[in-house]
Each structure stands twice: as structure tokens, then as C-alpha cells.
Image (tube, rainbow, N blue to C red):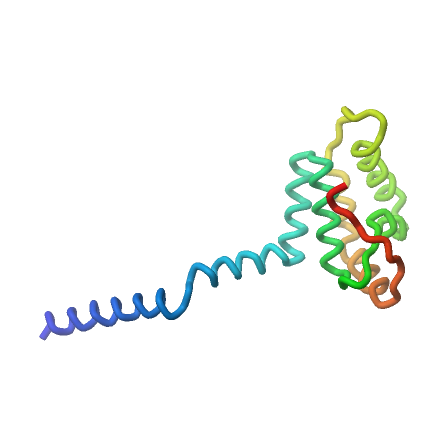
Length: 149
């Protein structure tokens, strides 16, 4: 009896494995889940954190733009400078201006560390999200943010 029960369990596991892989495409489901996670605000903000830790100004700006654009509907895009400029924190505005000088200023070899920008953005994260939600309903600006610049 024990041998028959063991064979039945093995047979059921084999049938289940076969049906799972034939009837339900696990790989595409996993790929879909991974892509869904990559579009989440948590993942996008973690990419910003990673870029600032690596002190990569181009990736930091691009990932910050991606995170901000998550909260905007496709019909309404906001310039990153506008979003930061509307916050009352002068220190954050100065740090963002420094990032822009590093990226687009005359001196291309300026050093930049992202820790301060990350700390300031993280401190104002909820305010930024609220501001973006409000601006999305009011249609503040129609200039499309180009994260590749």
C-alpha cells in the first residue's frame, strides 16, 4: 500500500507540474509581474536612491523624472524644475540647481554627490506627491518632460 500511495503522489505531482507549465505560462506571468514592479513608485524611487548613492547625476535626474511622472496622468506633464521650484525649501531648490549645473553647465567635470539631494527629496516626498496630484487635476503645464536630456 505504501508503494501505491507513493506512486500516486509522484503521479499527481508530475501531472500538476505538466499542467502548470503547459496551461499556465509561468515565465510570461513572472515577466509581467517583474515589469509591473518596475513601474511602481517604490521601485522608481529606489532607482533614484541608487543613482544618488552612485553619485551619477544623469541617472539621478532621469530616475527622479520617472518617479515624478508616475504621479502624473499622460495628458499632463510637468517640468521637473517646476515641481521642485514650487516647494518652499530653498535648500532643495539650490541642490537641484547644482545638479542641473553639473549636467548642463560649462564645466563638464564638476564633481557631484547625491546624498544631499536624496535626503532633501525624501524629506519632501509626500509634499511633492500632493503637489503633483493637485497640479494634475488643474493642468499646470503642458511642457513634456524629456528624461533623456
